[in-house]
Image 1 (cartoon, rainbow, N blue to C red):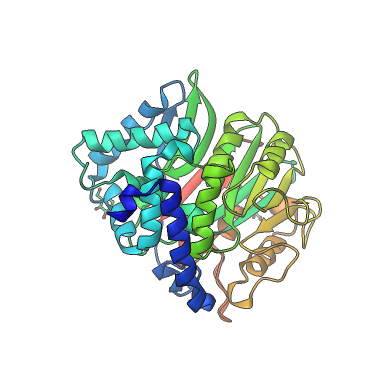
Image 2 (cartoon, rainbow, N blue to C red):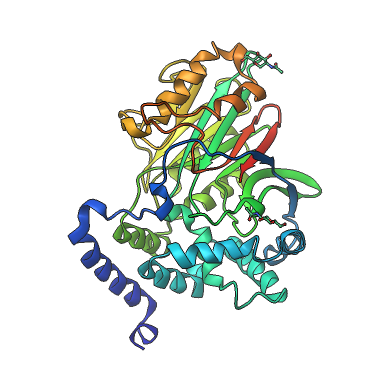
Length: 397
Ligand SMILES: *[C@@H]1O[C@H](CO)[C@@H](O)[C@H](O)[C@H]1NC(C)=O
Ligand SMILES: *[C@@H]1O[C@H](CO)[C@@H](O)[C@H](O)[C@H]1NC(C)=O
């Protein structure tokens, strides 16, 4: 077969050429839009469930860190009700042109992601193979899950300050798995070393990057999507990981949690890491008035940092959805206006606490067809405080 005898780089180059050919004639609709992103903007008609907490021991070899979590997941829910949804989702949603690229990446993962995280992904897969799911769970599907950000997402994140000066960071993760719920895979992972929690994250068992995380007394971080990509751009971004030392954005966030010892160091790391995709990093710090939105390009920060106390509508919070802060948001998806109005209604820092923020994150859209803070794509909600250590999450199933 042609594609197995070609060197990998050439295969990707060929894929790029094909993508160009596919994308150009349909320029207006070339973004990678997963099927259920076309769903309505109404609030999810579901109830939130508490998210279980697991422990990941960083003192173990990376290959072994997730083995117990995989075993527990299989014991609690069985393969079909957990990891099976990842496979079914990709079987339906992954365009073959990206599927081929992901197969390539899975075959030489260390060329694309840091060795430690590649080893965690391999260990996760090995645990599934050991449990008899080798055929049902191809490694490339697990790798594709870990590259999900590079494909698509959307979200709302808010950093605010309470009357005591504590920083609060709340977020909804809006994402679609096209009817294949990852609710059972959703966990609060506490990454420990020497028996102490170093940092924690809301994630899926199978996903080693960080979309939502916190290191107590240091900083909290969430990732919101910036720009959606054409197939051509996605393939180019994947190539950046191999040739330009660019990192997957969720692994850059995890590296920052693993190594930054201050809010400033975290902001610096997240402002400068070469990335494989554009993104918003929303960062809260343990001290009063430490909250910034970092609007990332591949190599730097666009339009400077947007930080407290220079919030758009009030000095005590900054808010990001999926649009550049210096631009208007589209009226059909003005979650920024919906969330800003709800925050402003709290009246100031005295109105900020875990309970009131939980209410904010459930604000519905308006009857004028603006999408709500809570909407049909919301997968989970988290309220965290790097100042107090509060870290709580609910999954919408
Ligand atoms: C979660 O797992 C249970 C079995 O433990 C199953 O009944 C349920 O349908 C699963 N839910 C989802 C959303 O996959
Ligand atoms: C949280 O703040 C709200 C006002 O936003 C207030 O009504 C409520 O009593 C506060 N709850 C706690 C536990 O302080």
